Amino acid sequence: MSEYERGFAAGYAAASRTDVRDITVDRGEVAPAPKATTPKRKVSAYSKRYGQMFRRVAPKYKLKSGAWAKNGFKRAQAAAHKLAKRK
Image 1 (cartoon, helix red, strand yellow):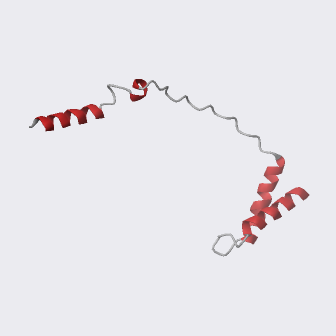
Image 2 (cartoon, rainbow, N blue to C red):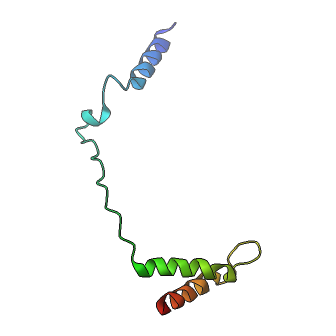
Image 3 (cartoon, rainbow, N blue to C red):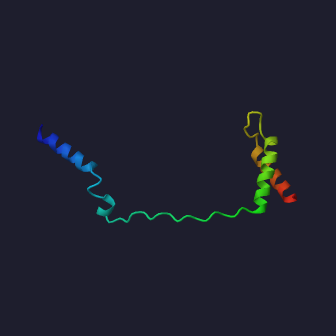
């Protein structure tokens, strides 16, 4: 084995040893802090009504394949809002 091959093997082994050194500590960077969990939002009564109405009217604005018709989502959304306001 030549010196070049030995050097290459040694360098390769040193680069793959993550247990020996921590790169973030060597550069003086701080480890990322865990993200704080945000509390779940309270679903409003209107939002629940709108969801029910949207599920009710959505099939009218869809094609046989199940895809939305042209401007179907927008029209279904408007119809659901209109129904949700009434109830």
